[in-house]
Length: 114
Length: 111
Image 1 (cartoon, rainbow over the protein chains, first blue to last red):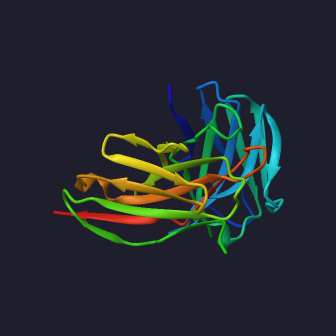
Image 2: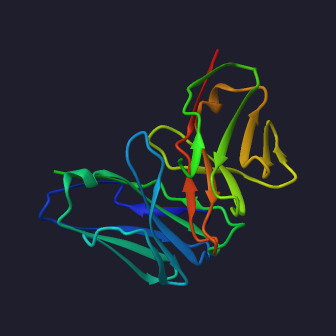
């Protein structure tokens, strides 16, 4: 299994809603990441988890709350989002954090905030 | 100056031709470099890592020039299926914890 699986693929939510994005990998990777990508822009790092511990938070607003329940799962809890948060949210994993490891990306969740 | 900078293109390439483009990075301490490919409305996919000695994978050749702080990607015998955005990615964090993406170079291969 060489995939990173993200659900849902599409999500439309209101500004008062609470929703969660899910990411799962079974490659034994110990580093997992959340990226945000706006149209025609490159992915921007949000969070890094290493061995289930949050190691990097790129000054992301608190309306985004990551969670890593175990080494295979990564969640992103969403609450009180703004329309400008509409984007493609990409999850990625790598064997570990470190220079030589490339990432495997999931196919993303396309989020629309209305 | 952006941390990782690319010519956005598009590079319009006749099928069968060779195309090459560069990416510059700002942090001289960067340790690892990658090329990713991203198709429209799809996730980025790792194309190849870039090693100091340069490396080749089929029709794709990547080079690293540390002195001038750039990496390059060359595509030989371009196929229609090579049309995509090519993202230059640099691991700039001292602990190797995060990848920084360039804005991407769009390549359009035409018959």
